[in-house]
Amino acid sequence: DVKVTQSSRYLVKRTGEKVFLECVQDMDHENMFWYRQDPGLGLRLIYFSYDVKMKEKGDIPEGYSVSREKKERFSLILESASTNQTSMYLCASSLTGVNQPQHFGDGTRLSIL
Amino acid sequence: AQKITQTQPGMFVQEKEAVTLDCTYDTSDPSYGLFWYKQPSSGEMIFLIYQGSYDQQNATEGRYSLNFQKARKSANLVISASQLGDSAMYFCAMVLNTGFQKLVFGTGTRLLVSP
Image (tube, rainbow over all chains, first blue to last red):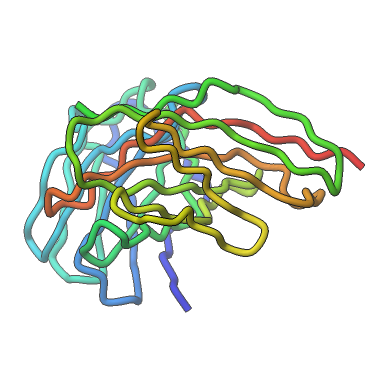
């Protein structure tokens, strides 16, 4: 069965901290994605990766970076956390093909104080 | 640029009735895919159904069907025989056949099923 695992369900950090959100998939998918979800705005794509060590900016990459050293793992990094990065973060993975659904993790609710 | 519009912030339906959730999209690309996802209060996004732009028939998956009207650029989700467990947020999303799997999401519709 498809499994995307995010390292934390809830996380509280302080302004200025460097924050790591980890995501692991066990389906051998080429593509991995990071979204943030805010009320009334739906899901917005931060970064995605279509192969190991490859990354592409999404719609809202500012203040974030990513790392994909292994196919199964995709990390989102908040270089210097700010309060406006308080949000729900969702990781997803997929095979390549317009008909391939993205499979999501359970999400990480991040609060920056 | 692609855009997904879901105009219904909230919908109410009684158990066992059918409900339609609206989705319109905007793209000039001829090749694209449309997805519906369900997000219960627990937070995970669950894939429900997919429709390709060249598919001749409307997609169906169990109690879910997609009313695809290409000329109107609409892809409404129909849930038949609603159940209490259908109460959730529902998101419509689109991907272009450009080689990357970039999904663009609508803002969602909250469905509440009452006994």
